Length: 98
Image (cartoon, rainbow, N blue to C red; front, side, top):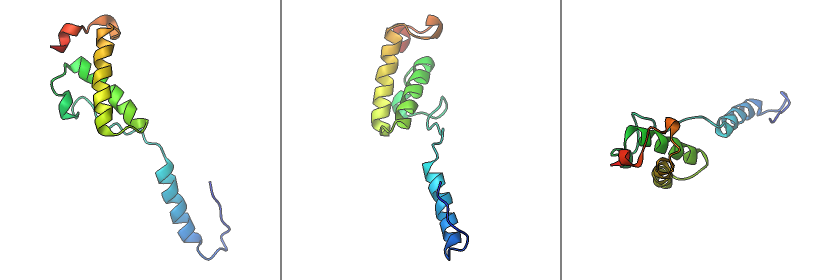
């Protein structure tokens, strides 16, 4: 990162700013939604479908999409995922969506 000689008069200020900059640059694996805390629009989805929609929406948020768009795309893609029969063990079907 950045370095500065200790003799510099504002060395402590530099250290504080450098640490603050490090905090801003660190990518955190904070997951905003999970099975117990999810958007209202996912409330009527089956648990398996909701889990996939949450996974997709969280990934989109990590890529920089806003929340509303992440939720809409997450739900739509999760439904496509189920319709294509790509679920683990193929235990989710389109009928589970009703």
